[in-house]
Image 1 (cartoon, rainbow, N blue to C red):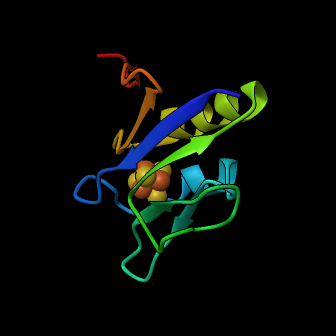
Image 2 (cartoon, rainbow, N blue to C red):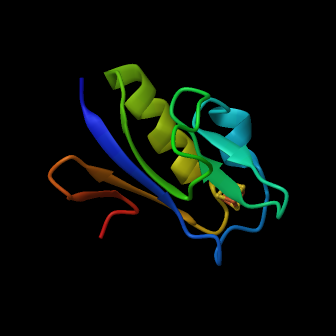
Length: 89
Ligand code: SF4
């Protein structure tokens, strides 16, 4: 399964929650109304704005959709080689 590195920039996140609506297993708002990254609904090692997770192709597509839905482009997606998939560099 592909691995993705997912990162939310809390300075850019405005808590619009469209990412959460699309993929609540990967994105959840914290008390500061910033999206944190989850691993299939879990947060091993504690809450984090950045996480590497293993995903299926379908999950990967959905995570990319969630990132595209973010009005401030606060979500960054990298593949396991470190190549930025979104936003396209
Ligand atoms: S869609 Fe963007 S601004 Fe909204 S909660 Fe998610 S990361 Fe934050």
